[in-house]
Image (cartoon, rainbow, N blue to C red; front, top):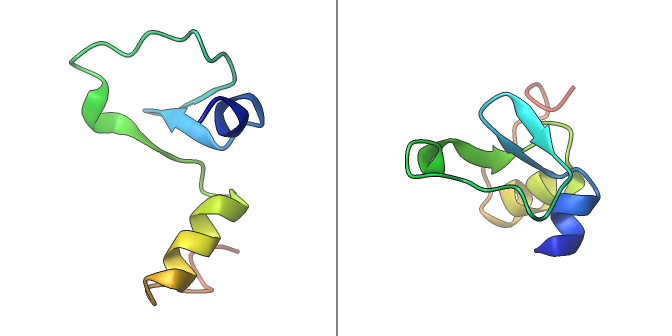
Length: 57
């Protein structure tokens, strides 16, 4: 998980998080997602067969 955060694959709300020590409080827990341009997100969507190429352009 630390590597994904350091490499910029994770965002909280609209902010890309690159600091593994970033504190996510309870209000922000629901807004932790993958960055839209992340290859990790693309691989997960391909695995779940929910990949839409239009969204990833």
